[in-house]
Length: 380
Image (spheres, rainbow, N blue to C red):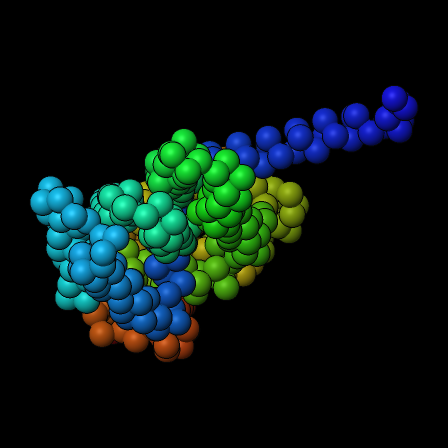
């Protein structure tokens, strides 16, 4: 047997090592459950997707009911009861998706697991293994839902359920009186490709695209969002704020006072350090759901869901955080803030509204700067 070409084995090892690193990064990456929902919200597609999911649940209910009239359908009483239970469960989720808002994460996980359980139960009870395998293939739909709206842990759990269902359904084909191992391998490989490979690879691909898109929205110096990222993430904030007690949005713009003097006196490296230090101090004072961005130069913006009574307090917290930032080059900030109701904002004109909010907060900020700086101005 000829020796492998020089470098072939190390190249193979490097490839496997890169795959292992990629898989570890995919598994450990924090899941932003609001990203996909914000994507749909920004494009006015939320209702369309809810109707589509409801239609899928309706088809599951119809399938579970129709099979009971088939000669190969469930025959015994307990099996028929199980089939009726699956139909009722599907009808419940059909109504839930139509009549109620988008579910929170816990309810969404419950939806996925109950859909998996219902499909698996109805498919494994089918007297015809091939008909049961067709039913198992319907697990692709909740698999795609998981791919778009959940993280790798639920993807792996869903894939494991799919593998168990395929094994259970094809066991009679492999070990029954008319055993056909070749058919078992052929159908099993097809099912694994559809139910395991496609959702997993799609999830990894979306993760890579999302990570690359996120990198383009970040300011490289401070690690904050840039102006485009601020506008993009505003949809996420709107989605997160729905149904909360904070029905108003506070938009804060702050500009470091006399920053040109810092650069001229201490140099641009010191100026960059001041920017990073000041924004880090501001970050520590913001709620976790707040959006913090660098608009350009020494001007920054913050957006957070806050009731009108707490808007000025948020702006004061930003001002004090900048003033109290440590270092040999002390700096202050002029701050402007505006407030607007969250309800009734149409996602189609969100970008225009963000420009308006920033303009209003910017106007209030310049009033503070003209009055001597290190102050807060409230729009209106």
